[in-house]
Length: 351
Image 1 (tube, rainbow, N blue to C red):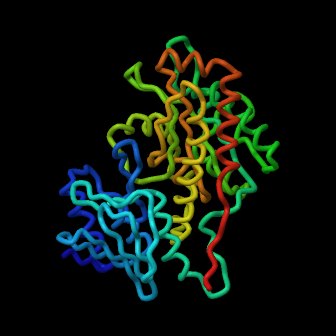
Image 2 (image 1 turned 90 degrees about the vertical axis):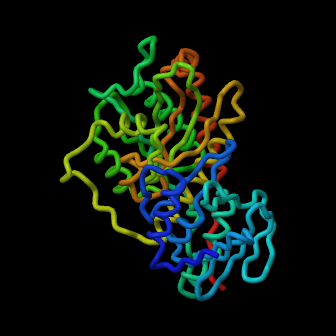
Image 3 (image 1 turned 30 degrees about the vertical axis):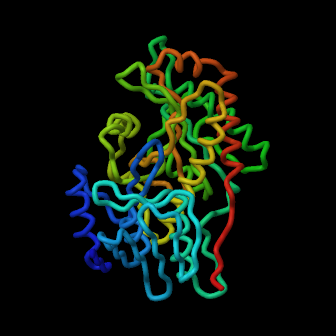
């Protein structure tokens, strides 16, 4: 049996990651994600560290018990029931074990977070796990002296980003949101400036719009990133490209360690991103890669739920043609707006 108290979490995570061959150790504030059979899974033990609850994995029985002073959850590997304080609840996708690490889907992670965050609120007060979206900042990536990726036919990413962002601005305004663009024309903004604009606007959601590129011209598809300190080798070049024009340390924004706020923002970001992907997947002929985590600067230094959209690959000839078409960009913007609108808003109240 594996028994872990909060004080030993760092040691056990290190051991797990060493066994699984991971290159780098994620910080405790991060919940690493893994793509298995085209489905996103999240490290259960890392989630427990975020929630500050005990993790107990009986390897022989393949049973996991999570508990603190007030609540307990029992899960079984490959078992589609979860027991919350002695009450059973069916889950769609059971937990799995991959290379020694217990993984759960976003939906199960949300149930666990609901349970343990609920009791942390003072009696009668709400914990906003799913915040109401009213104010949105849209950030067209690159601009001015920074063209971003450039396609085979010369299409510049900065122009694609602005086209999609302007259309998205109009769609979201029509839905009643208060919306702000970080740039409305072809001008350069530093990464710090972009994050600062969102923070000063007191936005409820930050959307950074980009187009992708890859050394393989066959690579194609639409994907969305949320903030994660874990950097997979497959996306290292993308992060380097988007974070490439860095700022001086004095320009960095001081972001406080906000405890549960980090978890709320991450879960909100994932939920919004998945809603957008569902809308975009209905677009004929468009490959949706899915939702991933990465340490993009503008996601790390904004203080609200934040996502970075990669609308397609300019290095792919067919997608470059699509992204050069204003009608296609408007269609994509409409799907993104519908995904944002579909996000379910709710809050938790301690009884």
